[in-house]
Length: 270
Image 1 (cartoon, one colour):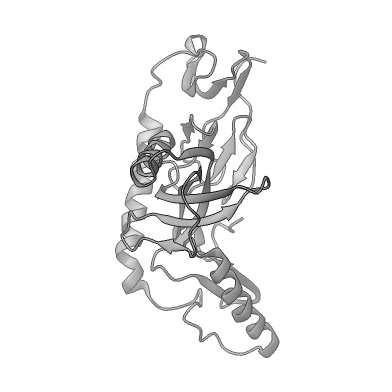
Image 2: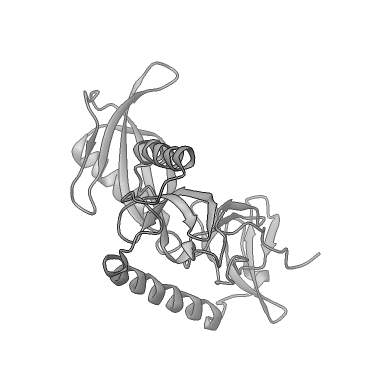
């Protein structure tokens, strides 16, 4: 979880989602491969619990709360069929990662005035490598009590490099904030069918609602408790996603991804 004001890290980190398919049929790979293009794919083999070889195809990253997840799974499946004709999708899942504005992880002192608090995050989808490097940086600082000199320092003076992305993300946050608050629900709660979800009107107020396949209602306040950004319904994963800072909640409001630390309030009929 992020501390909101001290350090303003929520504004210096973007939450990104990406997707993976586990494919049965392709021959095992002898290595791990990552496309260099911004919209490239990753490939690696693994062995399932039943002993079968699977190929993991990953990609289609985007900022949390901004795009339809179903479309990205469809794109990955199209790519899988094109590259590996006859393959079968055995499993699929998504993940969320912290991305820094300048592409370099944060590892070091949280703030100059709080030398006993350390930060390690923003691994830009290289969590295994980044976390090991961050652990060594932080351990060295704690053991030596030395000055912050690492290129990974959260206190680094690289605003000139971060500024374009910082202002782009700030503008995007403002647009999504206003768009959510001034949007008008397209239907009433009573019109919500089993399996459907979204922001709806209930007695003149906006609520976030999802009817499960049995008709049960799951209704919450569709506003992120982190910084009050309006949430968007993710119908593919049945979650409420924040387009501003990347928090995610399940259909009943439980926190799934920070920076939010408090659940959504319940709304709708008692």
